[in-house]
Image 1 (spheres, one colour):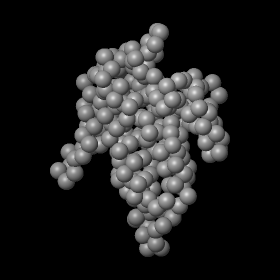
Image 2: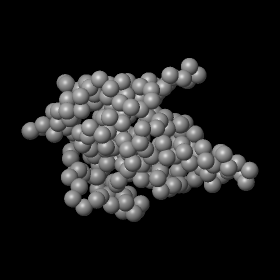
Image 3: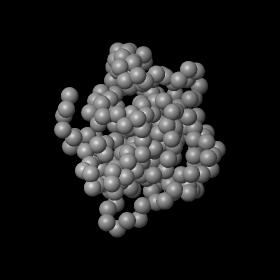
Length: 226
């Protein structure tokens, strides 16, 4: 479930390059760039959720462009800008300590972002079994030695990054998104925003919300080909 940690923001255009006409080379290139940006942002979110961000990732975020376009500043653009600004003023070690306090504290951590827990109320319950069946059908396997369960929100983001990077059909991406992310991620990010001591990760929660809303809207516009 490896993914590239890119800093580009995704665009809200999900046209497949396969649908382009013979004279639309520029449109094909634009679509490919947008799909790469989608995969990169999913990969970044996965990295931020699965482990405390390294100094490299914090540095890349701090150097990333904020969005100052007067034409369109929506929730995603605003959320991204807040994360970038926070990375510029917060020390990477402080962010690491925040992650540890929120996600890996001794005893019961404040945040436990697993699908099974949020959907059924129990860890390693039926939602995890269903997810594993779906991953097998997709030919996706957890890397040997991985410490996280497959239904961790960060791992699910990495699966989405992988599906996009492999140019899987949009209906396949949508099915995975709707079955394993859309139904519970907002409850998880709500807990993340309200968790005591969540400063940087409060902003990450808002970024996740904004991006998943864009994804849900885009998938809803695609014809159902199942």
